[in-house]
Structures are given as structure tokens and as C-alpha cells.
Amino acid sequence: MVRAERVCKNFGAVKVLKGISLDVQRGQVTCLIGPSGSGKSTFLRCINHLERVDAGRLYVDGDLVGYAERGGKLHELHPRNAAKQRRDIGMVFQHFNLFPHRTVLGNIIEAPMLVKKMRREHAVDRARDLLDRVGLAEKADAYPAQLSGGQQQRVAIARALAMEPKLMLFDEPTSALDPELVGEVLAVMRDLAAAGMTMVVVTHEMGFAREVADQLVFMDGGVVVESGRPSEVLSNPQHERTRGFLSRLL
Ligand code: ADP
Ligand code: MG
Picture 1 (cartoon, rainbow, N blue to C red):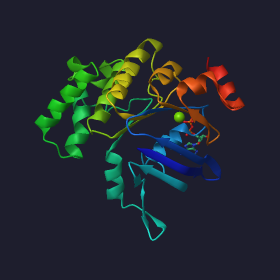
Picture 2: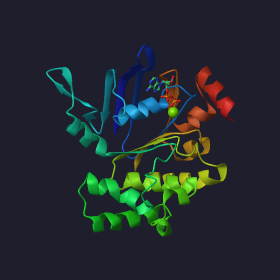
Picture 3: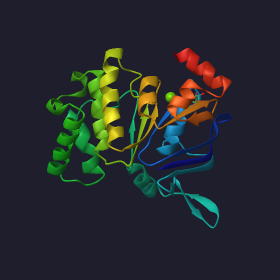
Picture 4: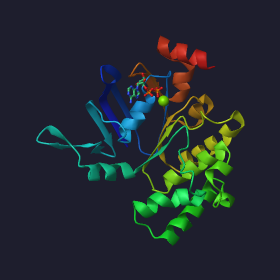
């Protein structure tokens, strides 16, 4: 579903991604871990067209992200075609980013109606199903400010799912939550994984990574230091940098 080949990203003179190579299989969960500043968010943002790759190649479901290849050369995609690629990718951020002036239902139906031209009744029906799925059926008419952080994040997940993405990206989805609210969000993500969604999750929740991830990737300084099955990486890290990071976490 995702293939990164030596992906590089610079901000001015600062090299942030220095050749990331990584595969994510369809239906699998990849957890990305690494110290602050190692480039995890930037990598997710490249997948989701929020940043442009400077070198290397990034594919989602076989399509080159943001570019078309003609005669061996890369040409930037027309914004319309880039937007089409992006539509199939859901992203959930640390800080929920719900529209504060819309109800929960309003947040969820907006993109399907606007982008997919879905009829309102149909969008509402589907939104109610999604709210049920994240355990918030009774909150349809609430405003974000009336919800706890965990509830807001579950709405954000439902909102992303409303676009029927083939890939879900999560950037530290529980890092802004009070500890007692982390579990309810991870439970929704666990259900999503069990239902076969392809997911890339930046997280510090090692319990989640160990139980749910098929692949654990440790990044540091803009490179993938090591990756493998979570049980292997966590119990038998091959690199000193991985060992150091994990020992500071635990
Ligand atoms: P992580 O998510 O692993 O903490 P980030 O991808 O957010 O790391 O950031 C990696 C590095 O890139 C950091 O040094 C950060 O300061 C830098 N960076 C991220 N976004 C920008 C930007 N828009 N402009 C300049 N530097 C940036
Ligand atoms: Mg980050």
C-alpha cells in the first residue's frame, strides 16, 4: 500500500528525511517510533501530500505520490489529480483538529458531501453508523468543546473514515490525551486494524505497537535505523540507538 524508496526531504539547508525506504503491506499496521525531531511527522506529511518529496520515490497503492512519470522524468501532478490521490488517505492528528463551530455530525458529513458530492441523508446515515462504531452514537448533536479529548479524537477518526480511505495515518493520536482517555482511542484503532485497515501510526504507546503492529519501524535523524516485527525489535534491538531510545521510554 505504501512504498518509500530513498525518500528525502529538506527544509532549506536542513536535511530532515535522508533516504527513507519502507514498505507497508495492504491490511497491515506499521508503527513508527523514534525521538522527537527524527522526521516521523514529516514522513507522514509526505505520504499525505502535505509536504513535497525532494528526492526518492513514494508510492501509495502503486501511484507515485504527487508526481507522474513521463519519459523517465517526473512531473508534478496537476493539483486536481493530487487532490484525488489524497482523498483516499485519512489522517488523524495529535490535536484532533475538529471544526469547532460544527456539531459532531456536521464534522463527519462535511467532506463526503463537499468532496464526494454525497446526498445529505446518505452522508448522515453513514455518519451515524461511524459514530456507533467509535462508541459515540449519542453525541451526534454535541459540539467538539462539549466532548472530552478522547471523544474528540474518536470523532476525528470517524470523520477520516467517512471518506472511505484505503490508508489511515495517525500522528501521535493519543499524545495530547489525559492518561485515562488513551485506552478508548487505542481500542477504536485496534478495532480498525482488526477490520483490515492499512494503518501507519506514529506512537509512543509500546503496548499498542507490540499487540497490534505487524511492523515496527525505528527512525532517528531522518533515517530508518531498524524495522521488523515488534516482538523482535522490542526484545532484541539490533542497534545501539534503538536500545538507547527504548530504554529511555521504559
Ligand atoms: P518528529 O515528528 O519525528 O518529531 P518532525 O518530522 O516533526 O519530527 O521534524 C523533523 C525535523 O524537521 C525537526 O528538526 C523539525 O524542526 C524540522 N521541520 C519540520 N517541519 C518543518 C518546517 N515546515 N520547516 C522547517 N523545519 C521543519
Ligand atoms: Mg511529530
